[in-house]
Amino acid sequence: MVYQSGPQAPGQYTTDDTMDADLGKTYLLDDGLYRYVKLDAAVTNAGGKLLVHTLTSGLITGAVAETTTAANPRKAGVVPITGDIAATTTLAIGTRLLVQLSGTSSVRIAATTTVGPTSLASSTTSGAAGAIATTADATSSVGSYIGYATNTAAAAAAGDPVTCVLGIVA
Image (cartoon, rainbow, N blue to C red; front, side, top):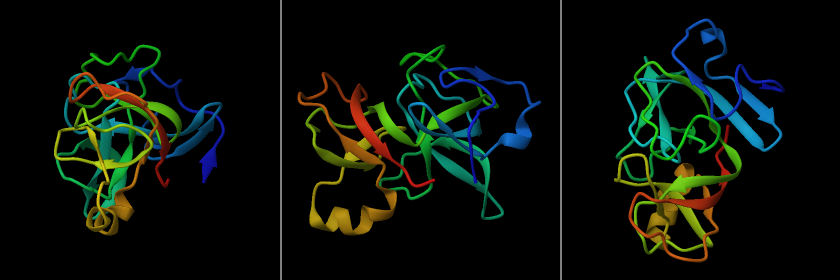
């Protein structure tokens, strides 16, 4: 089920647990789909990082963390760089926020050579996306596809955010 009004605006975050009944819910907002989640671990330089679901007894509960697994299919969303969240914001364990699933966003990139249009999936660089470059990659990565990069110039450094059109399956 998709809801129309989120527990907070994209770019806001809190450690208050009063809205925990909404964890894992998906919201359709003006600029795309979002999911309300809670961090299982602190995330440094959070803006633009890709987060994945951490499972409890094999179930998605709304808890998320960074991943260092290439082509991780448990993608939860991207931390938006907006509002109170900058590219350099550190979010504490237990932070609740909306992560973006669809629409135009900034996503941290694992390699400076990634130039759009390029399909993206999680990479071995913590919280960063990497290109799905080869047929073999594409075959094993189809379930981990997060969207495509639209940047026309290479990123200045690995870990920098680039523009991406997200298409994460809710």
